[in-house]
Image 1 (spheres, rainbow, N blue to C red):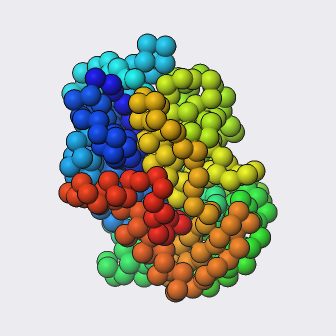
Image 2: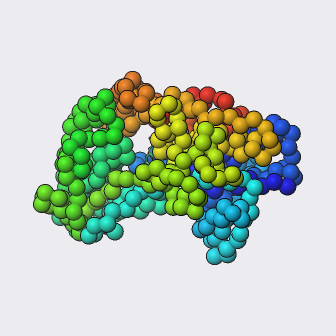
Image 3: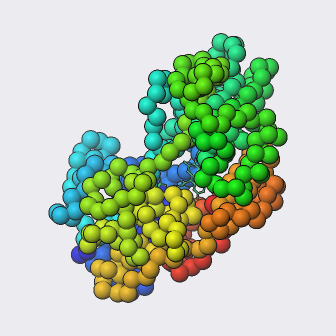
Length: 406
Ligand SMILES: Cc1cc2nc3c(=O)[nH]c(=O)nc-3n(C[C@H](O)[C@H](O)[C@H](O)COP(=O)(O)OP(=O)(O)OC[C@H]3O[C@@H](n4cnc5c(N)ncnc54)[C@H](O)[C@@H]3O)c2cc1C
């Protein structure tokens, strides 16, 4: 019996496991000969791209309803160590029990995490990186009306004007207003976006920038560019130029790094901590370890490395799942080849922005783009549940799923 172990129940992990089952079945390999196991800390696929929205607790899909029907064995545990020489991982379950799990091929799909700032008061910052963090943020917002009325009660400072920061900044005003209105609070709602660079969306490029700037302006989002947060207390934020902003809410969005489990895999990493992989997604310098999703620095197209995004995590999973099985069975592996690159940026009540290509040429704006973004966020990134056939059909690395532009 051969064992494929996938670590991580995110977009890359789910599609790796489903794709591995698909390739095994296509080649007539029964479960008694090849077992696919997925180990993940949580019980759900968390829809991370939606965590800036209200009601984040709903942004999840039970893993057993996705992968149970195709016979993937699931272990709910946190992996703390990987021993590539022994081909095993150490995992601790919620009951505190630690187990060693062996594998013949490993897919590391443990995603990425926000880099936490080290500054006075940083523990008071909120973020929307994980379901629990987004839920804590939502809880804080809902309780603002109960706080003592004072300047800044309904002011949010958003730190970082990258992809996530812009989505939070354009959405948070509406969420604050809804909470204030529900309690009859008449305090002003204020949103301030702080960015170290001199422009918003520094990594999004000049194409989308005018649209982002105009959305921020029409929503009344104040910008503090070329500055950063130096410290914060319960009631105010101090910026690097000395300005003090009374604010009960600070959201940190700046900086992502690959899962710390990448440190157990020998091999080179890029500046985001992602493992270098070959065209088949095998970690360079290893024989049995593959990486997919935000842990993998795969080449998307000539000269471009994949982004830490669902758009790339899903196909990376499909290709990795196929390739581990092909590797074990001596079948033909397929080089990673994603769909053309595109992005969809939510701009709150003003609409959204859809771009195509690595220069992010704007294709669609306003409410038309918003409809596409909503379709992506509420349907296209959701895998089928309770339906083995639909899941395996979508798990095909060669399929061209419509709308994987997120
Ligand atoms: C607010 C926000 C907005 C975003 N918006 C977009 C967007 O619009 N478009 C887009 O394409 N992307 C977006 N992204 C990025 C996207 O969510 C990620 O790139 C994507 O989730 C990566 O998928 P993944 O499977 O690699 O990792 P993840 O989805 O992070 O999944 C990682 C999995 O590994 C598990 N895990 C981690 N460590 C361990 C461990 N030690 N042991 C066991 N299990 C472990 C986790 O529980 C999780 O199941 C956004 C992200 C955020 C936070």
